[in-house]
Length: 247
Image (cartoon, rainbow, N blue to C red):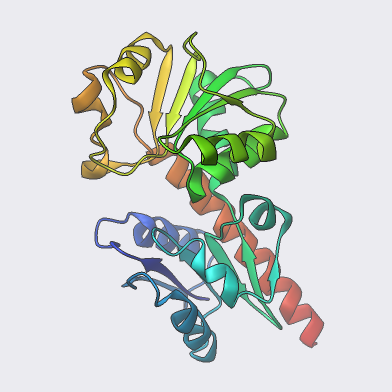
């Protein structure tokens, strides 16, 4: 299996190490996984070229999750609903998928040690990762709330994912999908201080929310590991099915 991550930046990514571990665990001796820096507006051409170069699949990170949709021949329900792709399989067609939402759900349920059903969960941000998380939580009967600076975009996302605008009463669980280093309004910082659990989808040095809020923050490592595993399982299942079709 020839695998890769594309996006910008990618030098910080833990994905190569995780996926090389998955390849070894699966006994795939000739497998590989590399991180390739691909700036914005170059995603479509790169995806098509990688298919020609014999890649089995790729992960897609910021800022390419939306633009690479146009390179896909098909989208799974998860990618279609989130309108974002973080996983691609190259078979007879270019198939776009999204595992960010599942990764966030698995991470939250690991932290809570119980399902997220009926939990009040606030999502900060309206971008690709936020939409994937909201799409997944919509299937769990969780009560979801959205915060963003663009009120019109917040309203559109709330309608699409059956969520509500940010409430006065602090959600017990808050998950931030905001870029590293974003300055939050003081009123929102106060609410973050009052939440039972705050999760930052950023990880490592890119997780700066803790320094701004001055409270314990769960960094995005659990989410990364869960979505990475889901992506690998997706590639493996589709690769095996593709080989069987060829026989």
